[in-house]
Amino acid sequence: MLRKMRSWWQRVQLRRELRAGPPVVVYQMGKVGSLAVLRSLEAQGVHPVAHAHRLHPSSIRAVDLGIEALNPEAARQRWQERNEGLLLYDEIIARRRPACFITLVREPVGRNVSAFFQNLEVYFPGAVPDEMDVLREGFLERYPHHLPLTWFDDEFAAALDIDVYAKPFPREEGTLRLQRGPFEVLILKAELSDEQKESWIADFLGLDEFTLVRENVGTAKSYGDLYTRFKEEVVLPPAYLDRMAQAKYTRHFYTDEEIDAMVARWSGAASTIEETSS
Image 1 (cartoon, rainbow, N blue to C red):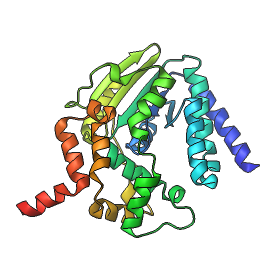
Image 2 (image 1 turned 30 degrees about the vertical axis):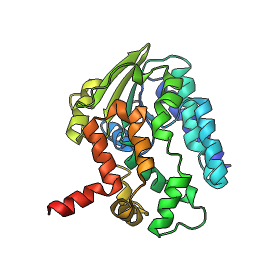
Image 3 (image 1 turned 90 degrees about the vertical axis):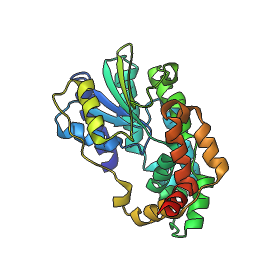
Image 4 (image 1 turned 180 degrees about the vertical axis):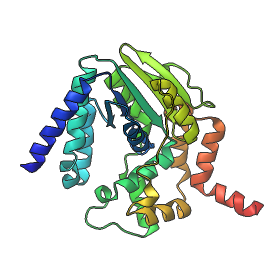
């Protein structure tokens, strides 16, 4: 009963805030540094501000079904994220109210590894293994690797009716502003420096200044040691890396040099080059 009451009250508060003025919504796939942006906006007094990985009702339902198939208990615990996403959709998108959306992109392999470790209990219900071979197999076989590759088509375009692929992305600069109807969008590469992100966000929102504070860093969490070892030790198969490198998403947002570096990083080639040159 307490969970339902608390959820109801949070929805009432959020609805009131959204109706107070044009909101800023940090809206992106998971594990791209979004919580740092959200918490920094809140700390600087930007209001109203909200956060979502999924807004479109059909997309939210698809995620629920996918998680439920792996771990029913984890699916049941998504009530708050689900309710907030549906409320944002109803209050902003369905009603076509003006809003500013900030979204980030990240190279897909590192992003998937981070998301996998964020949700280890989903993929290994009961007990999380500490053997790198078992974790590697679990990552390759159980994680939905298409998520970053299709998020802008399946979720972003479906919710906002904005096709990010319709306009060339300035891959060297790493940022782009778009507008459609009442919605303004700022796209940022997660790989930009904090100073670059701060400058672009301040300009986008008309702030005199903006300071980014780090949040939700994987190495600081309970799985931090496993995550660090995985990144240091695991080599991913060429077929997987080629699939990620050739994807429309990757080619749209990243330069050839950045894609080559991603492949080298996760194929073990980067460490081999470093050892040879040292």
